[in-house]
Length: 165
Image (cartoon, rainbow, N blue to C red; front, side, top):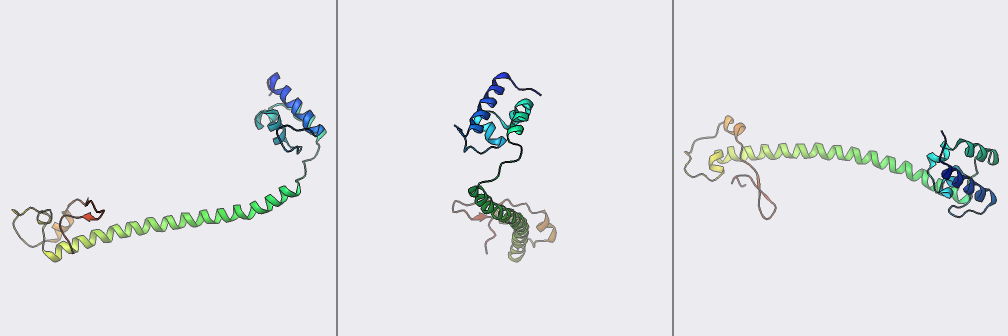
């Protein structure tokens, strides 16, 4: 696949500067990435410019060697990437544990609320403050069918219909 004449001209000018050791926009390393940067085109454009790329490969037949600073950088980055991967796995595992604990906490809260209602002999109607409701013992059916909504008080605590400890 060919590139536009303007892109090809940019690539040829960039190649000339890089091969002459006079880069304007890069560190001067003879890499395809630097060729693209020096020309101001995308990496994909370099690979579509087959004629320019063949000429580049003729002048730079083997991959450019890394400079000592690049090796040092890569030697620093490699263990950091491995550490980041490990930490990511730990985060996913801890998030799973947190989700499981949140579910258990919600279930324990609901069970605690039901037990408090049963202990105090309150019906759902009484728990919501309805004084006209008849008083009778709470049955297991009342606990299962109770749907007293939780409301957040201004201080951030939850109001669960008046069943306080």
